[in-house]
Length: 295
Image (cartoon, rainbow, N blue to C red):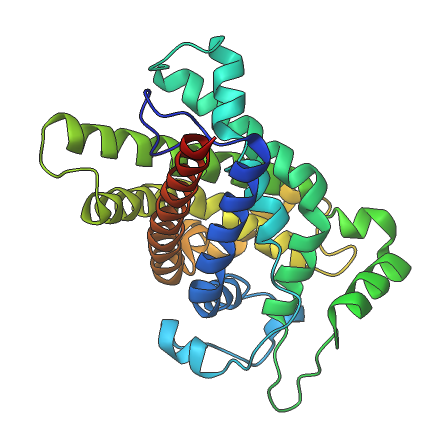
């Protein structure tokens, strides 16, 4: 996995998945306000979603928020896309060390797609909770997580719960492989050129760089995914139609709406997640070695 040296003995698969999910949850708790601000800025321009309401930048958006519920899905999502990354990578290479960039990208895309395949309903509810507002003359669509699942199923069926799966798979495959591969490559370059040792500052710089590159690459798909998943039935024929409508009505800049909070969110999320994951992983390895030494 990211951060493990070839000489290290990796922890069991279940432990890796649990530690990845835990690290992602920590990152989500820290960055959730920025993620919500990003979603609300991205849907700005949707008449059915925010008619008469405009957010003035990142902090102006955050100031209008009260705590949203039903937005935590990282435990099952990140445990797959991050926790399975090295297992899938090793499967593609047959266990060989130092895989090339294409293999790493393929592994990242694979685990990103796998995570979306079964976690999509949680993402749909997350986006809709973040998009709804509690301002004057604007009524919330959902009062709780289970009510949201029930309402979506009753009104839109199973297709509603898996709405936006294709753009979400595209987006998360891009995000996953970009985050993991960029983090790996930046960290390896830092260590190879002996700019830093394998410690917290190195993890911080690597994660920050991964967050910036990921935001640039994934923002257009992320905006389309958010718009499409939050749209009422019939507004768009498909995700491609949603993208075309945005292009023709709002111009190419629409695809980078919410870029600042997206960067702040992904940058900080990557920092918290990777630093947490590195520490959890090292603690597990130390514990494992102590147990083995006693036996």
